[in-house]
Amino acid sequence: MRKGMVALYIGMAVLVSMLCFVPAHAQEDIVSLADSAFKDRQRAPAVFVHEEHNEKAEIEECNVCHHLYQGGNKVEDESSEGQGCSDCHHVEEDDPARPLMKAYHDLCKACHRENDEGPVTCGECHPKQRYVLGS
Amino acid sequence: MYEFVTGPLAWIAFGIFIIGMTVKVISVIRLASKKDKVVFNHWSWGWSFRSVYRWLIPFGSRSMREKPVLTIVFFVFHVCLLAVPIFLLGHNILWDERWGITWWSFSETSADYLTLLLMAAAIVLILRRIVLPEVRIVTTAYDYLLLAIAVAPFVTGYFAYHQWFDYKTVLIIHILCGEIMLIAIPFTKLSHMILFFFTRAHIGSEMGERRGAKTW
Image (cartoon, rainbow over all chains, first blue to last red; front, side):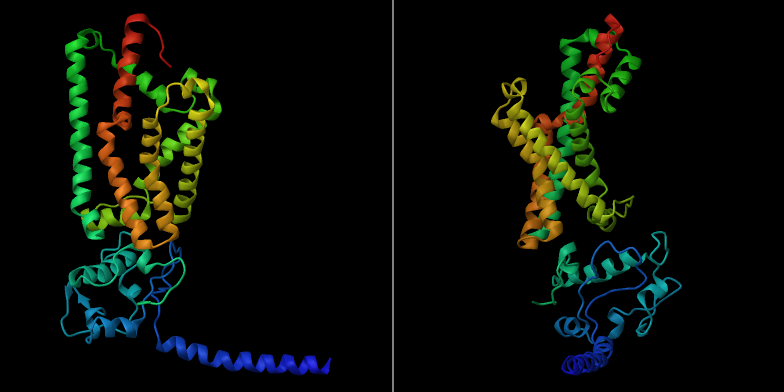
């Protein structure tokens, strides 16, 4: 009985200490585009390992993706990191700013097409079983 | 390869399908006007529309009522065959990206189940050709080939959606199967997807207007 309790306490301690690392890790590394604005998900969030992607694609400027539009025009040299994509792009299909799903698809695929690199088909970004980019 | 099958090859497939079917319809009308002028002299829109309508709705014709189980299977097969690819989310995203046109889509889960339903119906259609003697004696390998051409895009699409085997390869095979189907339509019995309306209208008008007989 006592032994069992000790084992239980140790187990709980280990679990709790592991939990401490999880949020820190998650905040640092973006591994998928799991936008919480999508309420009715049709597919798994697109795999996107932020650091690895930018290193591979040799993207240094944040506003290559985190663009800022004002009055329908892109503001050069300004970036919008810190803002969510869904702050401007709404899920509703009639959003004049470009609906959220289309915004993601267009931004990723247009760049992939232009550079002839990176995935453009459904299942390459939305895997049934999650896999890590580049594997 | 993906760029090729969704680019030039898609243009060729849709081109052959649309031009091929247009030529086919025109040639059927011209053939009728040469060999069967009476059809046009005594044409009845009322009878022809009723005939088409009766054969379009489930249990609308007598032969459908006589074989209720097969009728359900036929309708499930044909409805899924048309609806799944037209209202599939992945396909509609492509239409939107390339042509800027959008319309309603099935949820991915619904499309998944409808594809399963179509494949089950296809199995019944194959069994029908094997089991029923009156169908067996008019069945040749060509009939199975046509069924395979029609069903292959769905089987491969199902595999692609579930990402079984190598996803990119399966996806390309899926697109090729769809293109083979489109190209095959004008040159095979699959052309009944358009010619159905002409044959049913013709027979309905012919029998109805001249003899007062229903053909359903």
